[in-house]
Image (cartoon, rainbow, N blue to C red):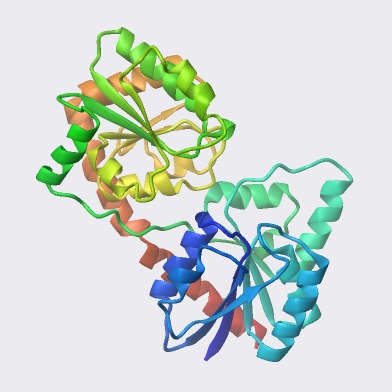
Length: 365
């Protein structure tokens, strides 16, 4: 039995938290004994608690930060006591330092985002430290693997295990019509963007492209799902277009994704978008910016379209093409669903992760 410890320092449930919850659902219980470390006050606790075969440790000094000297001491004491075979961290520098001090056999860290390289000499010091503290880095996409190399991580330490998600539950037509009525959606193409309202997500370009699309006489509804610091600024930008609807924060976005015809990603940076994967699970085509992991997921005119970041004209043209070319839309719908279930389910992701665990465990023996 291989003892694995997963560490997530976030208090809210983001990409790392969802990754962890998928792991807890699908991991091989015959060959692995799993423990989880989370900060005190983490929103993950109630979701982890349903798995009675998983040990949970709530640790002080680690909430929403990568490093705290006090946290290192607490974790080192726990690691010496439990003697884990694999320590798998998600951005927690404290855990990696404590793991080295406690002489854990294998330390793995998953990078869920694309990080800037940084300036010399800080970048050099950081790369030396990261290589020393970790045996393997998991990249959630090919673009993240390249980013790790750019940041100085040794190639032999990098493994790619692509993101996967649970398929979104498909709703029947009656339920979808009920939701559409709530947002006054009639016979029109629905474009949806599911992202926090922050600069990196490029909502202003989505809004400008929507207005350009509508100015040409096209019918459409544009759902902006989420909340964030740019909410008022973006509402001001969209005030003369009633077809652009701000839903605010939605705990379960599945209902709105069900009534969306075309998913849109307008970000300046993406590692491997969970929003694209969830849309694919329902057969929804995506119009995405040609950045990060997006081109790994979106094959133009096969399951969506790619546009250059901040190119409003290109995005508006993509809106028109996806709304008006029914043959293209049907092709993209079919291929999106097929790609998802063959490559990007949560279950496939966890099988690939456990394959890596098995390989590295045998290397260490």
